[in-house]
Image (tube, rainbow, N blue to C red; front, side):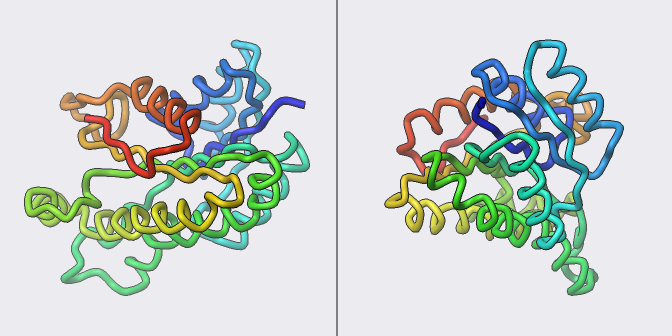
Length: 228
Protein backbone atom coordinates (compact mmCIF):
# COMPACT_ATOMS: atom_id res chain seq x y z
CA UNK A 1 0.00 0.00 0.00
CA UNK A 2 1.24 3.49 -0.87
CA UNK A 3 2.26 5.91 1.84
CA UNK A 4 -0.43 8.44 2.65
CA UNK A 5 -0.25 12.21 3.04
CA UNK A 6 -3.15 14.08 4.60
CA UNK A 7 -3.35 17.63 3.23
CA UNK A 8 -5.37 19.70 5.70
CA UNK A 9 -6.66 23.08 4.57
CA UNK A 10 -6.83 22.28 0.86
CA UNK A 11 -7.02 25.21 -1.55
CA UNK A 12 -5.61 26.56 -4.81
CA UNK A 13 -2.12 27.49 -3.63
CA UNK A 14 0.45 25.74 -1.48
CA UNK A 15 -1.70 22.78 -0.51
CA UNK A 16 -2.49 21.94 -4.15
CA UNK A 17 1.20 22.06 -4.98
CA UNK A 18 2.07 19.86 -2.00
CA UNK A 19 -0.58 17.33 -3.02
CA UNK A 20 0.85 17.19 -6.54
CA UNK A 21 4.45 16.94 -5.33
CA UNK A 22 3.86 14.09 -2.95
CA UNK A 23 1.50 12.40 -5.40
CA UNK A 24 4.33 12.27 -7.93
CA UNK A 25 6.37 10.39 -5.35
CA UNK A 26 3.73 7.69 -5.06
CA UNK A 27 1.83 8.93 -2.01
CA UNK A 28 -1.90 8.44 -1.72
CA UNK A 29 -3.38 11.86 -1.00
CA UNK A 30 -6.22 12.77 1.35
CA UNK A 31 -7.59 16.27 0.73
CA UNK A 32 -9.25 17.96 3.69
CA UNK A 33 -11.26 21.18 3.86
CA UNK A 34 -14.70 22.70 4.22
CA UNK A 35 -15.72 23.01 0.56
CA UNK A 36 -16.86 19.74 -1.00
CA UNK A 37 -16.78 21.05 -4.58
CA UNK A 38 -13.21 22.26 -4.22
CA UNK A 39 -12.15 18.93 -2.74
CA UNK A 40 -13.86 16.99 -5.52
CA UNK A 41 -12.12 19.09 -8.15
CA UNK A 42 -8.77 18.53 -6.45
CA UNK A 43 -9.31 14.78 -6.32
CA UNK A 44 -10.26 14.67 -10.01
CA UNK A 45 -7.14 16.63 -10.96
CA UNK A 46 -4.86 14.32 -8.99
CA UNK A 47 -6.50 11.19 -10.34
CA UNK A 48 -5.77 12.35 -13.88
CA UNK A 49 -2.07 12.06 -13.04
CA UNK A 50 -2.47 8.56 -11.63
CA UNK A 51 -2.45 9.61 -7.98
CA UNK A 52 -4.78 7.85 -5.56
CA UNK A 53 -6.77 10.65 -3.91
CA UNK A 54 -9.82 10.96 -1.67
CA UNK A 55 -11.79 13.92 -0.30
CA UNK A 56 -12.56 14.36 3.39
CA UNK A 57 -14.81 17.35 4.18
CA UNK A 58 -14.11 18.61 7.70
CA UNK A 59 -14.17 21.67 9.93
CA UNK A 60 -10.51 21.77 10.94
CA UNK A 61 -11.32 24.08 13.83
CA UNK A 62 -13.31 21.30 15.54
CA UNK A 63 -10.84 18.99 17.31
CA UNK A 64 -13.40 16.17 17.67
CA UNK A 65 -14.18 16.33 13.94
CA UNK A 66 -10.46 16.34 13.19
CA UNK A 67 -9.94 13.15 15.18
CA UNK A 68 -12.75 11.45 13.27
CA UNK A 69 -11.29 12.70 9.99
CA UNK A 70 -7.88 11.17 10.69
CA UNK A 71 -9.47 7.85 11.65
CA UNK A 72 -11.58 7.87 8.47
CA UNK A 73 -8.58 8.72 6.28
CA UNK A 74 -6.56 5.92 7.86
CA UNK A 75 -9.36 3.42 7.24
CA UNK A 76 -9.75 4.58 3.63
CA UNK A 77 -6.15 5.21 2.49
CA UNK A 78 -3.97 3.43 5.02
CA UNK A 79 -1.56 4.66 7.73
CA UNK A 80 -0.82 8.40 7.73
CA UNK A 81 2.84 8.89 6.81
CA UNK A 82 2.74 12.67 6.39
CA UNK A 83 0.40 15.23 7.95
CA UNK A 84 0.45 18.59 6.14
CA UNK A 85 -1.29 21.41 8.04
CA UNK A 86 -2.09 24.33 5.75
CA UNK A 87 -5.31 25.49 7.47
CA UNK A 88 -5.78 28.91 9.02
CA UNK A 89 -8.64 31.06 10.33
CA UNK A 90 -9.70 34.55 9.29
CA UNK A 91 -11.44 35.84 12.43
CA UNK A 92 -10.46 38.38 15.09
CA UNK A 93 -9.19 40.79 12.48
CA UNK A 94 -9.10 43.66 14.99
CA UNK A 95 -8.14 42.54 18.47
CA UNK A 96 -9.35 45.80 20.00
CA UNK A 97 -12.94 44.93 19.11
CA UNK A 98 -13.02 41.16 18.47
CA UNK A 99 -14.73 38.86 20.93
CA UNK A 100 -12.77 36.19 22.72
CA UNK A 101 -14.79 33.57 20.83
CA UNK A 102 -13.59 35.05 17.53
CA UNK A 103 -9.97 34.77 18.62
CA UNK A 104 -10.60 31.27 19.94
CA UNK A 105 -11.95 30.22 16.54
CA UNK A 106 -8.70 31.27 14.85
CA UNK A 107 -6.64 29.41 17.43
CA UNK A 108 -8.91 26.38 17.03
CA UNK A 109 -7.87 26.09 13.38
CA UNK A 110 -4.22 27.03 13.73
CA UNK A 111 -3.35 25.28 16.99
CA UNK A 112 -6.06 23.11 18.56
CA UNK A 113 -7.02 21.33 15.34
CA UNK A 114 -3.39 20.67 14.53
CA UNK A 115 -2.74 19.21 17.98
CA UNK A 116 -5.78 16.94 17.63
CA UNK A 117 -4.60 15.75 14.21
CA UNK A 118 -1.10 15.01 15.48
CA UNK A 119 -2.42 13.12 18.49
CA UNK A 120 -4.78 10.99 16.40
CA UNK A 121 -2.19 10.29 13.69
CA UNK A 122 0.69 9.72 16.12
CA UNK A 123 0.64 5.89 16.16
CA UNK A 124 0.90 5.93 12.35
CA UNK A 125 3.53 8.64 12.32
CA UNK A 126 5.69 6.72 14.78
CA UNK A 127 5.29 3.43 12.93
CA UNK A 128 6.02 5.07 9.56
CA UNK A 129 8.76 7.37 10.87
CA UNK A 130 6.60 10.04 9.33
CA UNK A 131 6.43 13.81 9.20
CA UNK A 132 4.27 16.71 10.32
CA UNK A 133 4.65 19.60 7.86
CA UNK A 134 3.20 23.01 8.72
CA UNK A 135 2.69 26.05 6.51
CA UNK A 136 3.86 29.05 8.51
CA UNK A 137 3.62 32.74 7.73
CA UNK A 138 5.72 35.82 8.11
CA UNK A 139 3.06 37.29 10.39
CA UNK A 140 4.37 35.01 13.13
CA UNK A 141 7.65 36.96 13.22
CA UNK A 142 8.56 39.10 16.21
CA UNK A 143 9.10 42.02 13.89
CA UNK A 144 7.70 45.55 14.00
CA UNK A 145 7.09 45.65 10.25
CA UNK A 146 5.08 42.43 10.34
CA UNK A 147 3.14 43.63 13.37
CA UNK A 148 2.27 46.78 11.44
CA UNK A 149 1.00 44.71 8.53
CA UNK A 150 -1.17 42.62 10.86
CA UNK A 151 -2.62 45.68 12.58
CA UNK A 152 -3.15 47.66 9.38
CA UNK A 153 -4.70 44.98 7.20
CA UNK A 154 -6.91 43.23 9.71
CA UNK A 155 -4.83 40.12 10.28
CA UNK A 156 -4.26 40.47 14.01
CA UNK A 157 -5.93 37.21 15.00
CA UNK A 158 -4.12 35.34 12.25
CA UNK A 159 -0.79 36.81 13.40
CA UNK A 160 -1.35 35.62 16.97
CA UNK A 161 -2.40 32.14 15.81
CA UNK A 162 0.59 31.82 13.48
CA UNK A 163 2.95 32.85 16.28
CA UNK A 164 1.44 30.20 18.57
CA UNK A 165 1.65 27.64 15.77
CA UNK A 166 5.30 28.52 15.17
CA UNK A 167 6.09 27.72 18.81
CA UNK A 168 4.01 24.55 18.61
CA UNK A 169 6.13 23.30 15.71
CA UNK A 170 9.29 23.80 17.73
CA UNK A 171 8.13 22.00 20.86
CA UNK A 172 6.61 19.13 18.87
CA UNK A 173 9.87 18.78 16.93
CA UNK A 174 11.79 18.35 20.16
CA UNK A 175 9.18 16.06 21.73
CA UNK A 176 8.81 13.67 18.78
CA UNK A 177 12.29 13.49 17.29
CA UNK A 178 13.29 10.62 19.57
CA UNK A 179 10.24 8.71 18.30
CA UNK A 180 11.45 9.07 14.72
CA UNK A 181 8.79 11.63 13.79
CA UNK A 182 9.94 14.78 11.99
CA UNK A 183 8.10 18.08 12.58
CA UNK A 184 8.97 21.13 10.49
CA UNK A 185 7.60 24.39 9.15
CA UNK A 186 8.06 26.30 5.93
CA UNK A 187 7.51 29.97 6.77
CA UNK A 188 6.19 31.88 3.78
CA UNK A 189 7.55 35.43 3.78
CA UNK A 190 5.46 36.79 0.93
CA UNK A 191 2.14 36.57 -0.91
CA UNK A 192 1.51 33.26 -2.64
CA UNK A 193 0.51 33.36 -6.30
CA UNK A 194 -2.92 32.04 -7.21
CA UNK A 195 -4.49 32.55 -3.78
CA UNK A 196 -7.19 34.85 -2.40
CA UNK A 197 -4.48 37.11 -0.97
CA UNK A 198 -2.68 37.73 -4.24
CA UNK A 199 -4.45 40.74 -5.77
CA UNK A 200 -1.81 40.81 -8.49
CA UNK A 201 0.97 41.10 -5.88
CA UNK A 202 1.95 37.47 -5.54
CA UNK A 203 5.68 36.78 -5.38
CA UNK A 204 5.87 33.21 -4.04
CA UNK A 205 5.39 30.24 -6.35
CA UNK A 206 3.34 27.44 -4.73
CA UNK A 207 5.52 24.80 -6.40
CA UNK A 208 8.61 26.32 -4.77
CA UNK A 209 7.02 25.98 -1.35
CA UNK A 210 5.98 22.39 -2.09
CA UNK A 211 9.52 21.58 -3.16
CA UNK A 212 10.83 23.04 0.09
CA UNK A 213 8.43 20.84 2.06
CA UNK A 214 9.63 17.81 0.14
CA UNK A 215 13.25 18.76 0.85
CA UNK A 216 12.92 19.33 4.58
CA UNK A 217 11.02 16.12 5.20
CA UNK A 218 13.67 14.18 3.30
CA UNK A 219 16.54 15.75 5.24
CA UNK A 220 14.64 15.85 8.57
CA UNK A 221 17.00 18.40 10.12
CA UNK A 222 15.59 21.95 10.03
CA UNK A 223 12.71 22.92 12.29
CA UNK A 224 11.92 26.11 10.37
CA UNK A 225 12.92 27.28 6.89
CA UNK A 226 11.80 30.38 5.00
CA UNK A 227 10.58 30.92 1.47
CA UNK A 228 10.32 34.46 0.08
